[in-house]
Length: 228
Image (cartoon, rainbow, N blue to C red):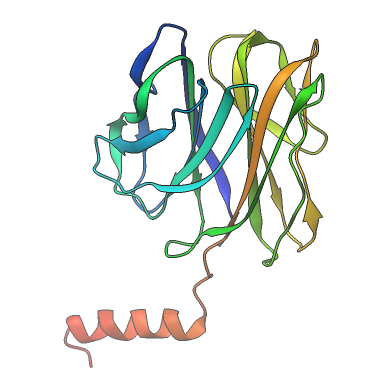
């Protein structure tokens, strides 16, 4: 099954608080949601992510540089909602909070996550560590957090998907759909050097329906109709 990007939303709030919510989005049953949450805090973490559809979110990884922290979470095989709001809750009140939520179709509904890695530094080119994928068809999704707004553009071979607010932005997500196993990383470009933290995660495609599955489906339909 081919992976495809569906949509994305983002939000940024500078004042200190214990939650941040993304704008409502139309999320379709069976799809994958990839969430990046950024914030400025020395010790706080994301304690949970929830949405109005009741989906379950799984933690992937975090990266920290000079109290700038980004975390990646995902929800697989989701329950759809035409006005779904995704909310991150923090372990303590934090400021300069960001969230991006990107939706993908065609991902493995049971075990989509393959590989992940992180990066951090102070430069104009945020870069993640390398990952080596294990499946041919995957989507590589990367996020970056900056604390304050800069102009962010996608790295080579990547497509910028979601900004946490109108440019200049404190964070962003990008992706790349690949069709062969290999070693990959992700980069972003900024208009000036600043502290940053980044994450890349790869998600596998779902299995295509083969002849046996199609035949079983047809047989079931014929039995229901009284033909068999």
